[in-house]
Length: 360
Image (cartoon, helix red, strand yellow):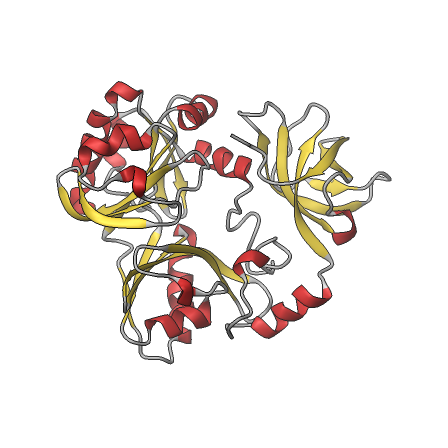
């Protein structure tokens, strides 16, 4: 089990620690609902240092990124980031990721913790361009400072104007007394804020200064359980749940990051899917009666026939009702359609809704 640079801090704070993606991670501190509300209404900090970071450099770095990712990275300018996915050659997804353009010939790819080795091997296998690749996942820490009070609370720590960083943009500058830190507005909670990429040796100093600066704003540490409820309320996909090696980006509603203005791995087959349609789609649903949908629960029709399964589900802390994502036949994927979630012995009715679940 790997530790992050801040594992001892979490243990000292009384966090409940669990194994996650090979790391010893804090799942919660005071409780999921309380932590969820802290981020929605104030400011909370996640240690997400288990995420993977790859640097791609050189004159052919963009060519490699264009080949392995579905989105069009040629549209990025320095200081911009892009959500994307890496299709495999069998119709599924290797991983979803964020691509940052650091310089004219330098990019940062941020990948999911559970896929670091798989992603690295995959990109390496596609690197016929001679692009320079460096896996720095073990050397970097990542803090997500999230919530509507994040900008105001953290401004004292940096000369960078935090309020001037648009969504999916970043600045490199001094933060919490440490130089050359990436300050990025690419959060996965839907409540604003930003992420801090720093070297492991600086992580404790950054953490301490962040909590000093945020003390008057009610800042709290937040665990992975609340990260999951927050991202689900926004309808953001989680790799391993809602997307995986067997789900296509078109089925998963990721057509918006699948650009056919270029060739990429399996682009021909995915273009065909986009043009001809798919048999199933990932939908968002809300239960219309009491119950909590969980990952793996069956989705059934009015006659009780299994038509799909829940990929993510929870009791929404913000909405006070059961919400979830799951794959259903395309003919049932339209908003307003009724499906049923098999919660133990009861088929609970649910309605297909448009995302996000949580609207500010």
